Length: 212
Image (cartoon, rainbow, N blue to C red):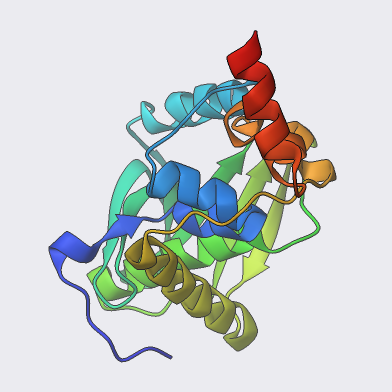
């Protein structure tokens, strides 16, 4: 666990944790070079999040639901917003249970779980409480997947936050490496992994551009 405390000026977007797990270069392009491009996947995801964030409040028996909840952690140096935080009544207290909405389906890596765990850590710091579980809702499967914030996931989340801070602080965008996941990346046209990722290809591409 990190003992460092960040200042308000050091805070980075919580979404960067998911970006760096997906691809370090994508994370750098977004959070260092401030580049962004939308494709079908990101548009559908944005629409889903917008619908959730504008829903306001709701209450169902022993559950109070808050939408678009602001988040911050000075310990991890993160700032962002939770799609939904359910507050479950436990006796006289209301216990927070974060829920993140995703347009697709469960992923093989932990990028969604890390993002959700970071939200829980922010809420713990803000509300001075302990949160053991949350959930991910996937639009493709229309199913909700419970996530336990165990020691392994918390450690991965804290290490990922530290890694993002180091990447942004260094200010260096990693070189591209083409893989299958590049096809779903909205920044693929800006990144040009097939062109710039192979030795000699970048110079040939630039020469071709100057001659045309």
